[in-house]
Length: 100
Image 1 (tube, rainbow, N blue to C red):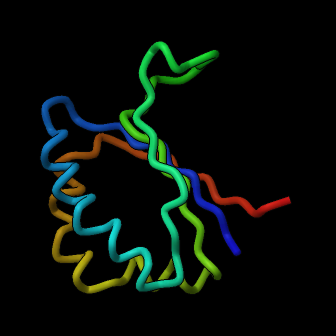
Image 2: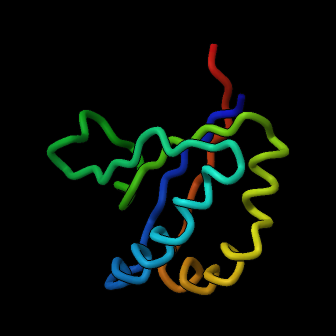
Image 3: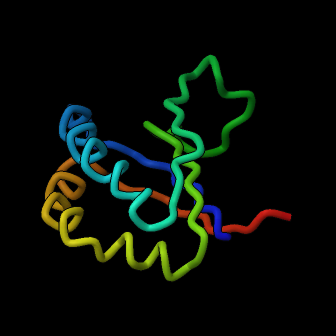
């Protein structure tokens, strides 16, 4: 099993576009043996310590295998909406890990 943490930074004013992309992409995760375990929108009151810019959202996702994750990224339906992701997201940081 692989675990992915993604810090997502949105372009100002593009929240609705980002949410539109997420409404398509998130349900597709389960088609590829994946699960959205946690989706958080942190605010300044929820940060204890931060040496980086506050992300708009933090996702924790798990897939049974690396191949499942790669297949998710190649999903044809998801690819049709990538223009929304590109329009809305300034940058993102993906951290891959495994359960210890």
